[in-house]
Length: 202
Picture 1: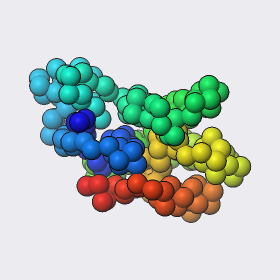
Picture 2: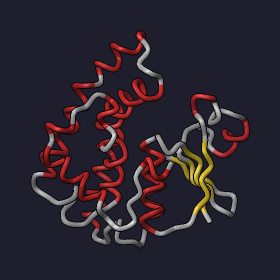
Picture 3: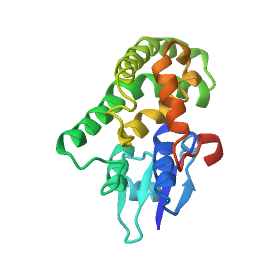
Picture 4: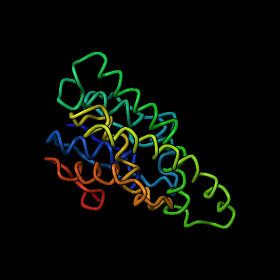
């Protein structure tokens, strides 16, 4: 049985919970409070020297970090990761997009607002994240106007990767009402078998 070290309010950690639930995979969840420095303790750093969550622990003593690496490991051999070589590359393409063009804006703005409580010294940084976040959302909107899910009619871990922070983007100041295709996609994901909301997972 896997153990996941994480914070369910983190989109990166929630991604793992969502996939495990959809797979029907039993697991242990170990809450880590990053604001209290629990990911920077000597014990945690021995498991993951980068000091970040989520972290997947195996019963044989191995550990795997980085949310999208964990998703790819867990999804291997399932319907959530296509067998077709090109489609698998498309999954990776969206996951790289998520980490480099989406998360640095939407997740960071949400962190400043939700986790830090919008301190005055962070207001300018929060506002500076809005343009990049909307740019990423427009890319998703364009794709989802053409396809049911991000790489076609098949729901994959590409969708899980982007769902994690997109569905709570409003907590970072992003109004999703301007993105009807994304809003419809969010509803489709929430109606899939095995879906669990961030609130219910908590």
